[in-house]
Length: 89
Image (cartoon, rainbow, N blue to C red; front, top):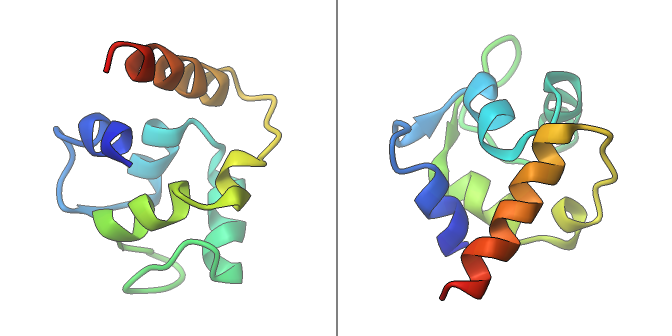
């Protein structure tokens, strides 16, 4: 979770879907599906989801996040940068 706290340092305390797309590298439609299913909590719902950082941190700590199989280069880069970050700790 500390890795994602580091990634979100320059983001506001309450995130938008666009922020989450940028932070974790998953497509907007996938994020919206996860919000609608309740896998990612939010403080408001469609059409504008607002997600406090702790809710994002809670989600990325789940097996659901780690088990995502995404063709997104951004998602793979996030996971690779996590490995580099972790090896430097």
